[in-house]
Length: 104
Image (cartoon, rainbow, N blue to C red; front, side, top):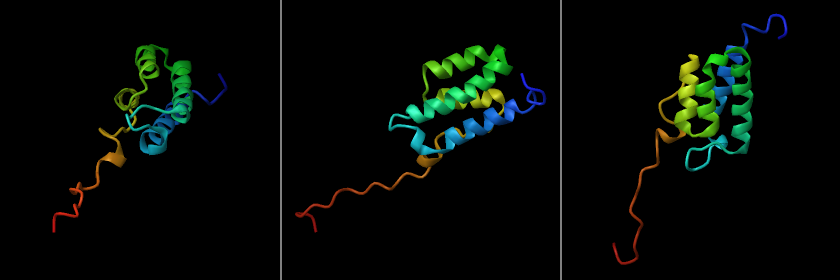
């Protein structure tokens, strides 16, 4: 481990997880990570496993099932801020019935 690195790993892991949880392009329509999101998750979990091996169960759970709930639970367990639901789903579009040519 490099000197001076021991205190920064938590901030680095939290910033990676915050970026992951706030960007919709890392998630598919079922709220599971795509390949780019899995790379970010791998980088964050590598930092956690190098410095906090006792969180291995939480890390393994997030790696096995990279869904929104598991990644957010890992972030909360580390003490990072994690929203309860994806920010891009908090304000969905209003649904309107399709217009019909027979309905005026």
